[in-house]
Image (cartoon, rainbow, N blue to C red; front, side):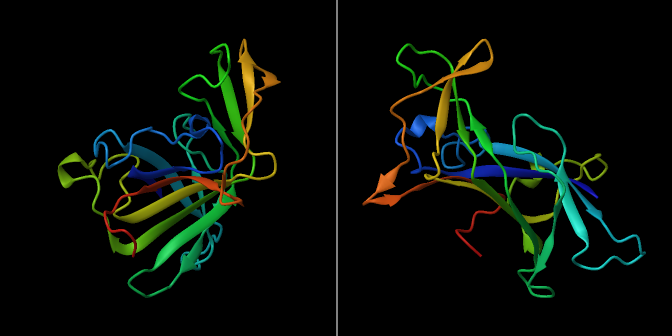
Length: 208
C-alpha cells in the first residue's frame, strides 16, 4: 500500500562537523520550537516481492515517492521485528548520501555552498501496534486519500559520522561545484569523532 507519514522533527545533532551550519534537517524547526512548523511528511510505498495471496512477513520492500524537500529512498527490504509482541514493527536501514545547502554563509565572500555527507545512514521503524500521537486528529488526513496516513507510531533517523573526509563542502558557481571550502573539519568531543543526526517521529514518549 501507499502511505503518508506526517512526522515532526524531534532532534538535530551537529557534532560531526566543526561548523554546525553545514548540517541541517528539514523542515529546519524542531517540535520543541513549533509543533506545527516541525512537520515533515514522507510518502512511502510498501509492496510485496511474493506474488502469493498470503505473502510472508519478510517479503516486503519499501520505497518513497520523489520529494526534493524530504528524504527519498530506493526500494529496500523490510524486516519484521518482534513479531506478535506489543512493539512489533517493520524496520530498515541503508546508506543514503546527504547534501546540505547551508542556510547561512560558510565562505569568506558569502557565496553559495553545498556540503556532502557520503557515509550517512538512514533508518526507520514503522510500528504495527504502537499508537501514534501526532498530528492531532483534527489535523489528520482522510482515509480516502491516495496516501492514507500510517496509523501507528513511526521513528526515522538520519546519522552521519565525522570521518572519512566528512563533511566535504564546496563553493557553488552557476549551479556547479567549485573549490572546496577550507577550514571545515570533522567534529570532535574529548578526542572522539562526533556524529550528526536528524530524528523524526510521531509520538511524544522519549523511547519505547
